Length: 432
Ligand code: HEM
Image 1 (spheres, rainbow, N blue to C red):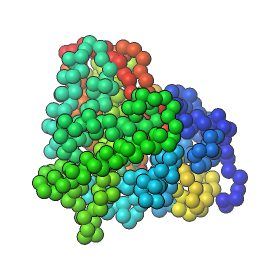
Image 2: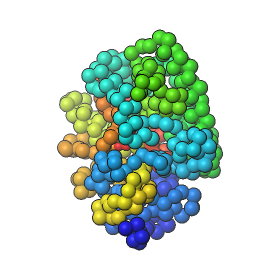
Image 3: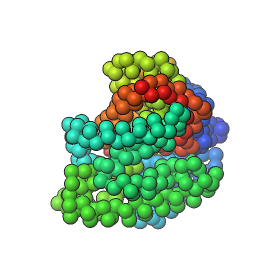
């Protein structure tokens, strides 16, 4: 099966798919995905730069769903689950003691260990438990809107609201004191924004891949030092937050080892922040571009959950995750060999016209809206209820206090193949 010719793409298409710059300029990228989905839906991508291993790009919703849900055939090991991390894979291996995963976390585990670790915090992220922290989240949302209002009538929504707000929430649930948040912001942006010079704090354009990897590794080391101290504190004085749950967790009768514990903190801190920032900014973009929609939802709050869900689909902040085939198989009729590497592209899947009518349009009334932005199967986003809750509370607060809103200049997306979204969103607004 594996010896059959693989449906490759031309170098320009391959470059478009793997170049972080493409993700800063979405429309041409969506055109590329449309073409591939129609002509070559499971395409073999060979990087023209030779720096990345080849992989299967899955662009159809149905195929992306199947790969996500078949966790026995499509594993999160042994290859890295984030495409760009192959750029410094030797460094990652040296750093981690041989694994392609620089950090050991839920997204790098497979069965049976994955579920044992996931169960440790799963209850905590359920709606029933989250109800207990709604007031705290609302206070954080209010503070963010205070900052925006104080800076008005024109301000960058990303800087004042969508970037800091989910960070505050996630830091609160991890029990990180407010004075340490700037450091955490820098570290998460270095880990996720490593491909974008505005976000990786270097200010340097087109950094060589090994330098980007070292930025990420440096951030991981800083995280580890920080959370080692937090663990000691949460073991001595457990509180009800996620950090206390992780610090005191026991798997198979043993406390978590340092690498696994750090990975757990890092995945919660990192996964819960830039992702929700991106979907929050996307929701504001959609509303600022369509003032009538803002007025409609101001008058009828029952429209808000639809706006939140559509913003998550429309932005697809996590743009891909990779899998490794555990055995020979097929996807949509395309033979796949054991050991092959695959990319589930959530941006492409969430813009599949077979499932989403007029997919580039922001449609707050889209129903059903069974998007794949949170993934599916065993690894489906642990924080999906929290992300929706955060967005709902923030927009309730905004709708209470902002009368009208419109775009006040050019917006910009970040350069990243992995987690991406708006890094600049100037808005003009009036208050109620
Ligand atoms: C709009 C915001 C968010 C989006 C789009 C998003 C998206 C995703 C995606 C696509 C995955 C992988 C799913 C898969 O492999 O099938 C994931 C996993 C995960 N997410 Fe989120 N996420 C968001 C917010 C959050 C938040 C707020 C948290 C927690 C604070 C969080 C924590 C996690 C964790 C821990 C995992 C790993 C789960 C596992 O491997 O079992 N996410 N997320």
